[in-house]
Length: 131
Image (cartoon, rainbow, N blue to C red; front, side, top):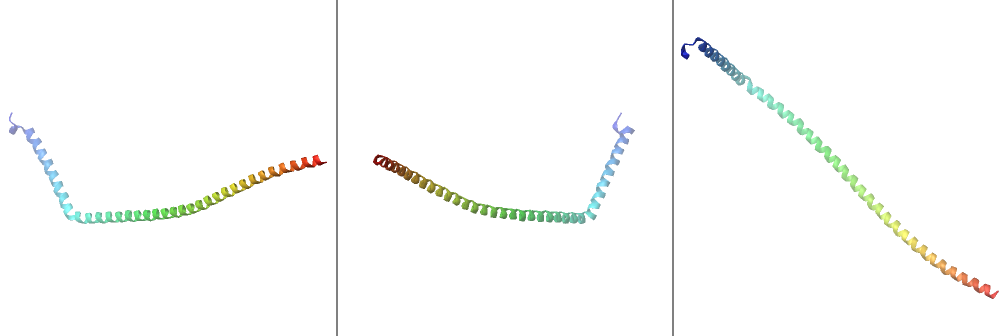
């Protein structure tokens, strides 16, 4: 049998051609609708994107401003803490120096007491001997 004489092959080819024609008609309709309504929709979409970008931009600016405030406050706290630490360190050095002075004075007094204790013992011995 030859392909040109088979009625089923012709029916299949005809159904295929009809499907392709419908598909092409749908594409033409879509293109016509795009030409008629597309530019306006793209403009609306563009405006919506610009508005969304503005919201995001304002959010970023607000976050940056808040971050700057936090950083400024942190820096002030660190400066205050540094000043307090320097004051406390100075107090510590002064207390250590005072303790060293007191310790030195105590040692001098202990040495003097030993001298006086030795002298007292000698005086008692002299008194006992003379009595």
